Every structure is written in structure tokens, then in C-alpha cells.
Length: 186
Image (cartoon, rainbow, N blue to C red; front, side):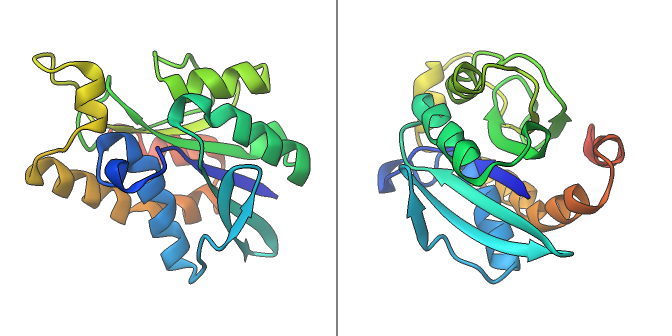
């Protein structure tokens, strides 16, 4: 069983922000599998499908970003995926806009959603896909990640999330090393 978590903030006002690129990523995967986020549990909404006989759950926590770990740990406790079968998708200020960074483990890099996940999982060893949103040093960090973005930035991030179904298909079939080799730096 795999648990794939897209991070974001619930609510219409955050829908098209850089911080919600994780939600958009799993939305594209759900569309490709013809499933919807029609199930709700533990302050999260989820969709599920089977891929090559394996159950896959797509989760969008419905607490704010900095409380994502509270939802993720409840899903882990309930559905019982191994920690190595949990994949977190989030935005990353330290990666150039539109670039993907896939990692086995690492620090939160100051990302409040990842900090909270690490607090509740009691580990930094979980798989993640970080989607670069760059960082405009002339703008307050919070305003940048949850504020409106330019049409150009939105189009670049849409191109990344358009690749989500293929990336997840590869995640479900390739070794994680091969997945990293295929997508990192591309």
C-alpha cells in the first residue's frame, strides 16, 4: 500500500498559490486515474485506486500546512503503510521555479508542513518530491508562498503538475534510485 500526500492549505483563498502545488500535483494524479477526492477521514480528503494490484491512497490534509503532520500520522496509523511507502509532495523555496527534487530523506528546509510531519512521524526519513517555487528575496516569504502568483509562474508550475501522472506511475514501478535519476535536475 502506498500513501501519497500532496501538501497545501484548504480553502478557496489558497487554491492557486505556490504553497498549494502539492494539492495540484495529486489532483492531476487523481484525474489520470479517474478518481475523486470523495472520501473524508481525520481532517483529510482522499482518493484511492489500485495500480498493478497495489492500493494507492492520495491524500490532501485539510488542516493548514503547518499542521499537516497531524493528519498524515492518523492516515499512517489507520491504513498502515510502511514509512518507506509514504511519499510527500510539497513546494520548495530553495529549488528553482519548476524544477523537481526527489529525495529519500533530509531536513525540512524550513518548510512548516514538513517540520510538522517530521514531528509526528518522529523521523526525517520519508520520501519526498519537492517542486521548486524559487524565492523572491524582495518579497516577504509568507506573502510569496500564499499570495497570488504571476501568470507566467502559474504556467511553469502547471507544466510540472501536468507531469504528475507519469511521475507517480514511475514511482509505482521503478526503484526509488531510478526515479531520482530520471527526474532530478530535469
